[in-house]
Amino acid sequence: MRGTAGVAEEEPSRRERSRQRVEPHILDVIPSSAGPRLATAGGGVIYSLRQPGSQSLLAENHFVAVMLAPAPGNRAALASDRLTRYDAPIGALVVQPATVEGRAIWSCTRESVIIAMKPESLADVAASALDAGHVALRPPAFGTVDPIALRIAEMMKIELTQGGTASELFMDTLITLFSIHLLRTYSGVSAQPAKARGGLSVSSARRVHEFLNENFSQKLSVAELAGICGLSPYHFIGAFTKTFGQSPYQYLLALRLAFAEKLLVEGGLPIAEIAYLSGFSSQSHLTATMKKHRNRTPAEIRPGA
Image (cartoon, rainbow, N blue to C red; front, side, top):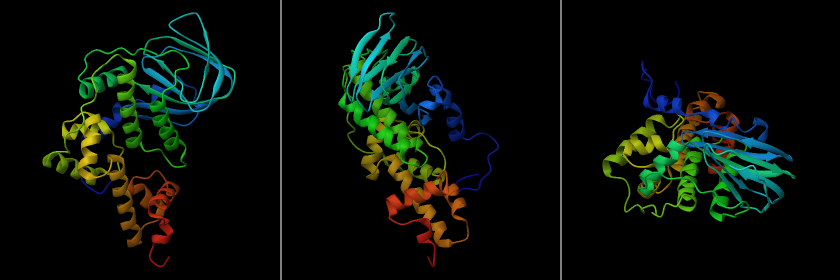
C-alpha cells in the first residue's frame, strides 16, 4: 500500500471510493490518437493535435474545445444540419452542451485543448459556487475568442505535456476554475462567485492538514479535499490558499518532495521505489520534478553524491 501509514483496510477507504467514481471513459469519444489526456473526478482534459479531418459527436457530457493555434477554414454545426463556415483564431472556443449533436470539419492541423465535464458535476459547481439552480449552457458564435479560457487551456496543455505524469489534483483545480468561468460566461447565470472572506476554520485546517499528511502519496481530488472541510471546490481552493499560503497542489507537491528527500538521505531504498512511495509515477517523474523545484536531482541528494 502506498503512503506513510501501515494500517490495513478491509473495506474501501473514502479515497478509494472517490477514485472508483472517476470515469476515464468520459474522454473515449475522442480518438486516443488525438493526444495526451487525463480524467479526474471533475471531468477530463485532452491536449489535441489533429490532422485535417471531421468528427460528429453526441455525448452525455459537456465538451469545450479551446484553440491554441489559428485554425482557418472550419465548418461546424450544433443541433443543426446546416454547417457554418468560420475561422478560429487563437483562443476561439466551441461549447457543445451534453446531448446536443455537434459536427465539425477542419481543413488544417488543429491544436486545441478539449475539456469534458459531466452535467451533474457542472450543476454541483453552479449550486455551490454561484448559488444557482438549473443552468443550461449557451454556446457562443463559432469563432468567439475567450482570453480567460485560453489562459486556463494553456496551463492544462503544459501539465499534460511537461514530460512527467500530469497531476490529477492540479488538473482537477483547473477544471473547477474553468467550470466557474464557463457558467459565468455561457449559461446566463448572473451571480458572481462570492470571494472567500477568510481562510479555513481551525478545525477544517487541522483535518485537511492531517488528511494530506497521511495520504499525500495517493491520487486526490479537489472535491474530496473540499468535502473534508464542508466547502464547495471553488471556495475550498481560495480558503486553503489563504490559510496555508499555497494552493492545494503546491502543498501536496511539497509534502511529496519532502518525503522523497527524507528517504533519499536515509539511503536505504532504490530511487525508483522512493518515487513510488512518495506519490510520483516513476523515477524520471521524481527526477524532473525535484530538479525543477529543488534544483537538485535525487542522485545529488543521496549521501556521498
